[in-house]
Amino acid sequence: MSERPKPEALSTLEAHIHKLRLLHEEEGLDLTAELKELEEKYSNLRRAADQQLSPWDTARFARHPRRPYALDYIARLTDDFQELAGDRTFGDDPALVGGLGRIGRQGLVLMGHQKGRTTKENIHRNFGMPKPEGYRKAIRLMRLAAKFRLPLVTFVDTPGAFPGLDAEERGQAQAIAECQRVMSRLPVPVVTVITGEGGSGGALAIAVANRVYMLQHSIYAVISPEGCAAILWKDAGKAEIAAAALKLTARDLLGFGVIDGVIEEPVGGAHTHLEMVTARVAETINEALAVLRGKGATELIDERYAKFRAMGKVG
Image (cartoon, rainbow, N blue to C red; front, side):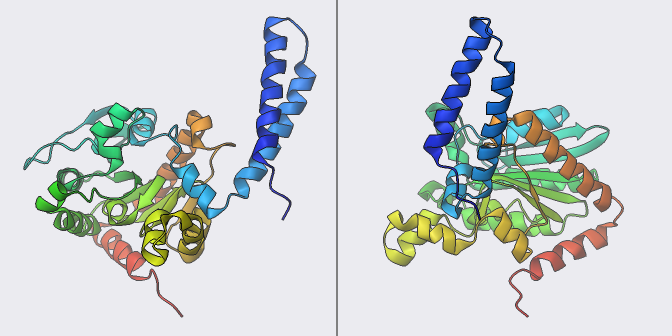
């Protein structure tokens, strides 16, 4: 394997390209050839760096604050999206969003974890960590999909379900278990895309799907690297070692058969070219649904059951 490009080299080259672009645009100097050569060199270095990320680097990439979230994808993927709120029991949970929409002529139910961009938004969205009412809202949407025979598409990006006292008082574990139970028995096609962090049962609650895909720089694990390190070594600072041991990258999980495919991200990550990554996500979803739509309800349920029962099987 070739040596991984150093971040400082990428930053220096990026700064040089920016300076030349200013001279080209503001001073009228014809630097087209030079810019093209440097931009191509930068793309190649960036691509090499992306392909050689360590598991810990990937975990940090998955948490990038500019990374697109569920509503970013839904807004670009669908026509006439109508968000639905509330669990009809306690209240609404902004950490998990969902509703009805269309991709082309195909009606869908869509849902996903939603983080915020600013501190105020993150507090409102609880940093993408749903409480019981969020999972009960998800169950309501799942049953809506079953009632109207609409495919379900979910976007996973959460550190995990909220572990606070108020969530436990309102039945967090039961809500997650019920969410998994209902999702496992849905008589419609279910497709999941892990777009950032796929943390523990909080992620799995909306990922019991016929097809599960991961973006190239996303992660999926039973626990965060920091949590794993704190338990095993009593030191969250050993998260980098834990990340390697957890095998949480898309490449690892594809090899284990936990997921069905990896969606390549643009050079530099999904946040650098949202339209491109959205197009790739849309293509993946459409291809999966084209296959799944031809299956009956019993076949879809049995296939989903067999898929998850086979995970972890040795020999």
